[in-house]
Length: 322
Image (cartoon, rainbow, N blue to C red; front, side):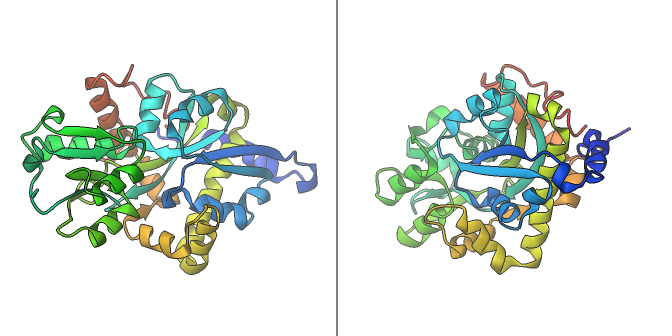
C-alpha cells in the first residue's frame, strides 16, 4: 500500500497543531541553495510567513559552490538542501546522509547547448571545443542528448571544463569555444548577442533530465518529521501563491538573491515548470510509468555505468515518500 508524502509525520503535525502556538518550541532551521529561480519560491514562503506559522525560524543560505553541498548536508550544517535531482542522487549514492522530500521544478528550455552557425547537428561537434561545468545537472542533460541524438562519444569532443555554467556561457560569447552548455540568463544573452548562435538542443527536448529537488539531512528527518512536513507544506503554499499572484511573487523571489530582478525571475520562469502538491502526488505515484522513482533510477543507473556512483539502490533515499 502506497503511503502519502511524509505520511509518517502527519500524526505529529496534528498533535503539534493542538498545542498553543506560544507553547510550541521554535525550530531553528537552515536551508541552502544557489542562485536559481527554481528554488526561489522558498523566499515566498519565508516572506509570507509560512515557515513562521509552522514554528520554524528559517535561515536561507545562498551558496554558489555546489562542491560543498554533500559535506554540508551530511554534517547537518544545513538541514535542507535544494539542488538538481541528478547531483542529489549522485551525492546520496556516494555516501551523503540525505533523504528526498519533494520535486521542486523541471527545466523546460531553460538549459541548452548553444553553438555557432557552422554546427547544425550534434555530430558536427566532432573535434570542436565545448565549454561546460561537469558538476552541473546540465552535464547529464548533455550526455543524454549526445547518447540519444548522435553517433559521437564524449571523447570525440574537446571538452573545456569550467567552474560554472556562467563561465561556460561567457567563454562562448567571447569566442573562446565553439559551443557551450549554459542556462538562463546566459542562454538568452548568447542567442541575442552572438551572430549565428542557436540552441542546438535544450532541456525542452529532454524534460526529465533536469529536475530540482529538496533533500533533508537523514538524522534531522528522523528526529523532526513534523518540520520536514511543515517545510513541504510551506513550499506548496508558495507555489499556490505564485500561481495566484505572479507579479508580487516574482518580486519576492528576486528579493532573496543579489543582483536579480523580478524581470529576471519572470524570464527564467518561461523555461521552468514548478511542481506543487498535486504534481508531487502524481510524481510520487509508483504506478505512473514516469514517476520520480523511475526517472531517478534512470539517472542512478546511468551514473553507475559511468563509474560515478557507488550504488544505484535508491531505496533509502526515497524512504520518506515510499
